[in-house]
Length: 181
Image 1 (cartoon, rainbow, N blue to C red):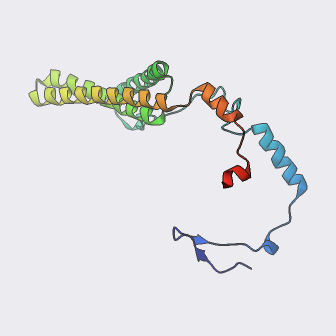
Image 2: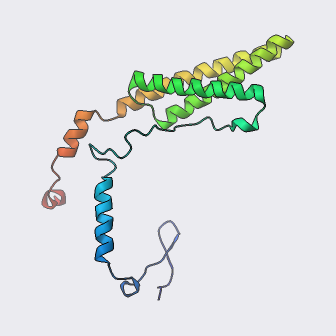
Image 3: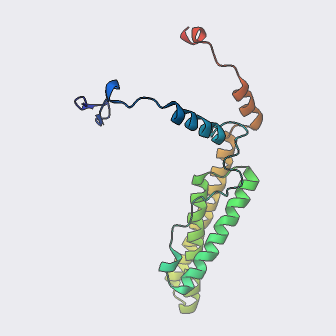
């Protein structure tokens, strides 16, 4: 039988199940789970090779290429190749590219693709307003590129250095008596 519903500090319902209603522990199931967990390894320990060889999929453009007309589809593919190249360049230059940096680079790639289309239309029509819009989009692209570079530089500086991480992992844990003082 379940106990009455209580609310936690966030106001969400909190249900407690009495111990007598829980199913008994199964030693075989526990041993299987422990073996699977040991095989998998802990995700944030040195030497964990769970994700080795997997490429990160960060900050895709977010535009379905099938839903846009053919000329724009070509520009979207070009923008995606540009985004991938810039992510590799920034990660190589700074040693780290976060998901936020990759998202900014994705936005910059879309702005660049839009700027190229508007510029082509402006040259075909000779409309000064379109030339102004193309120039504004080019300026926005350069701002996003600068932002991504500064973000990558700052985030790479905040990443722990490998030797610091090893020292932290090997540091002894404080005793309960020392932590209580």
